[in-house]
Image (cartoon, rainbow, N blue to C red; front, side, top):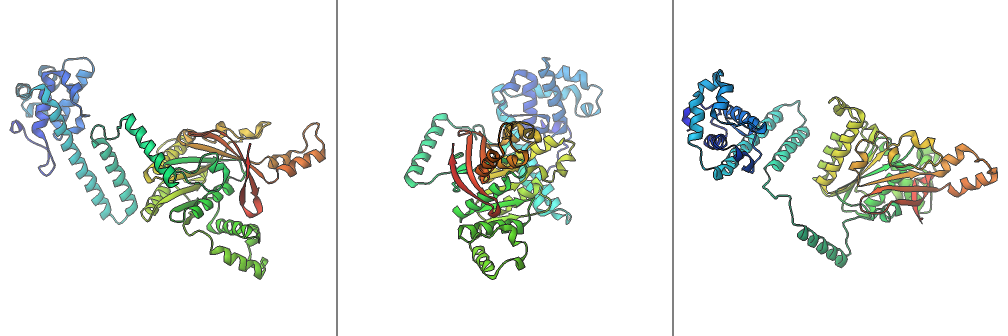
Length: 472
């Protein structure tokens, strides 16, 4: 049948022209065949453009409840030059006359899609080769784009049931995992020594995006750094990445050193480290000793402008060198969204696209991602200023994408600025400030697999230290 018309598909590309003819003939003979193909056939599946037109026209008629047969197509194509060139009604009649049994149509559909996927592989590889030869193209960008295109094709080409598993088998897998964890003492969740993570969330789990939000001066960056630092110390064989937009590497390092000197009993405030001449020789010796105890597996990135593409590139590259356990990003609303906004989306949609991509990245790399976020000013207008989920600024899909959402809150900040409440004496007010001065509340506003509630932590701001207090 393939000799009945000129073949326009390049001979160098995989083709299934005869399968295309048989498939078209089967559908034109019995329109019900379309529902039994088992393959997602579209016009793009056909290597021969004329076949693609015939398929789209036939399936369009079927979708509208009309009969798709040779004379129906002839009425729509009789003045078309290509239709006449390819034999007109005679060719359509030949397709039906030589159509195979309808029960073999799924096999021809499979051959058509296989050829289409092979052509797509060649197209992606060709574009990658062309881009790789362009000195203006960034190699990582080429790799990332190629990987994404191949990944999408892989999902489309996956055999039926590739991601399906019987519920009983899945449950039995979970039981085996629990038995293994009980026998070995291991757990997929990593504890960091802070109750707000270990008790509230049962640790940091792979494949999860966590949101940590708070108003300015609530200590969210301090908590994020403490979590990253603790995670790195407890997991020396795995990397922890800290993307700092609000601080440079020196500021993060001063806080790391301050924490270590506090733990060693020397307690050098990080603000005192701005100038070496303000420090005594003994203090500098303590800092030198502390620097040797900073975990090597804590990786700092203080890029001035941080985009989602930059984070993806850095974490994928870092994961090639070993397991990445946790990435902390400080913070969402000051990330560079230029490329996303150029697509014509609004700010809320752009931020939602970032969180969706971070969630996929966490699953792709089997890691935890802790993303810091601002809160809107709405909580400032309430008597009870403790944040809630609706306070997430430009929330979009932030809450939806997150496995857990944590908020930091310090009552002393507001007490110091508001003065005594009605009926409260100055002494009572001062006592309230003193009682809450070093208390940070970490509010779990959302947890997919645990309770919500408040964990109280001790916050020693001058040393950037966060310690456990208890839960109520």
